[in-house]
Image (tube, rainbow, N blue to C red; front, side, top):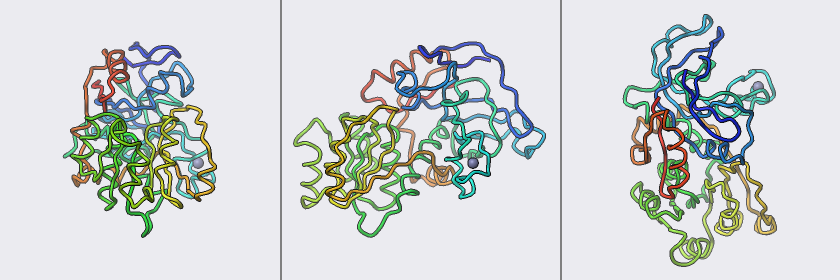
Length: 335
Ligand SMILES: [Zn+2]
């Protein structure tokens, strides 16, 4: 089959062996794959992985083969898959239903081969059926949208949480903007791209803020919150330079939430965190059922988030354009 393989230097399309399924797996004919910041972090070598590696973990396709121990009803279903494979269902975290932290887990497209390929074999417990109302392209947003919902799974809101500042309005930031709005939070949406800030405004963000215009962002946010700062500040940029502003934009005794790091060392001065008694949260993989419900109910809209579509053969072009274009949100690869 054809697959986009990262060899430690470049991501190129190669012919590789078709994956074989075991008795508890299904084979998926991949239709649509979203490119993620994590993929770029691997290509840019800030996030080390084994190589050669087929990238891709936000995907949708059809089940075309089912292992002997798998419910045969999965055959021919339109599906997406969770990212965490090799779950043991018996470790400390699995016993608490935290399968995404299983000690033996391996992430598709990061630790083991992913979905930028004609076919992928996945364990059947990772599958989720795609409702008829969602296209394959829509369904590539389920994994990142689940990560957006996870923000609130690990950080339940309390009565004092009324405002949230979101730094970075890429795919995750704009999905999170919509989820946070559905929870009734007042949103400060921060980015350096006019297009992304305008899109956050269109989704309903109360204070769309361009970091290149007017006073610095912490001062802007304090000016809009009686000098306090936002109750919650989320960083989706993975950029160490943003963190100083993230901390400075948070009110005393507020909550910081880190959504991405891209494997980059992040020097931060924690003095302010200690003195002002800030709480730092972080989260990643999340509940697919809530993400699917968010999309089918219309609470979260994704059509405006797709910037470009490419065929698998053009993966090198797709990845380079993704890196270059500042206003770019999400690239989809059709297989
Ligand atoms: Zn486990």
